[in-house]
Amino acid sequence: MNSPCNRTSILDGKHLAKQIRTQLKNRIKQGVAEGLPTPGLATVLVGEDPASSVYIRNKIRSCKEVGVESFHEPLEESAGQEMLLETIKRLNQDPKVHGILVQLPLPRAGYSEVEVLESILPQKDVDGFHPLNQGALFQGEPRFVPCTPKGILRLIEETQVDIAGKKAVILGRSNIVGKPVAQLLLGRNATVVMCHSRTQRLEEEVRSADIVVAAVGVPELVRGSWISEGAIVIDVGINRQDDGTLVGDVAYEGAASKASWITPVPGGVGPMTIAMLLENTVEAAWGVS
Image (cartoon, rainbow, N blue to C red; front, side, top):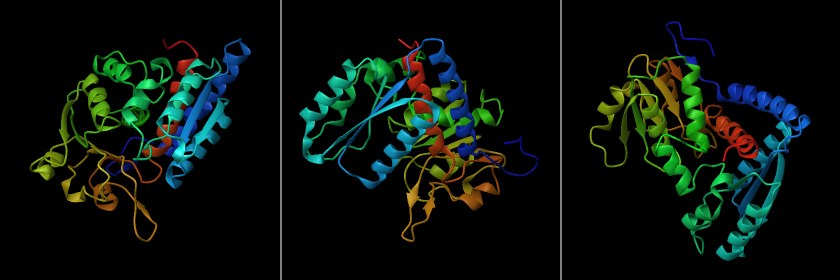
């Protein structure tokens, strides 16, 4: 990922995530040799959603790769809210478990996502979704930064472009990506504009951006003509087309002809999310209080 020279450079999240996993593997090996506990991550999956099952398998495989102990708790969709909460309570009390991840989305019927996320101990909430952890982030003193936003910031930092003073336009206002990314960029002194389904003159907003973060789940919403010359483009979307191909929220070819840096889909933000989850788990095990 060298700096651009009159052409677009690819922000290869797959390559960067591999580097981070290697660093974590060495760090864990050294820490355990010095007597620190082996970091442990518990994953909870309710039901058999195919996409969620793939995500969980990838997370378990990545844990094994770096030396994080993995605990998986599969539950039938019919298990119900109370059994899920009992499972989380047991994991909260397990000293070998330092991080707990409940795979979202939960089944619609019979489950309260808010109640489930609030039931995870904040010091084990390596996803960064507990209200106390989100509040700490917005106060500028985060315990755990949500994994996808943390990965996005790392990718932007790879460009070595000074974020201070740049205009960042974020498409999407979710608690999982949009809002935390906005807070992180504000913390780096960017001027942040958040756009959503009610935003007027969306194209004009994007055209004025030095940094574009697209996280709306609409295939190729952002056209290449919307991108200003030299902008950094972070595409969080991953949308499966009828023919099975994956595309992002940004029309890649057109945007790549204008941007200085751009993430591919797949292979951009996705691999960074798991790498940041592993990093948060190590921090949970070794001293983040």
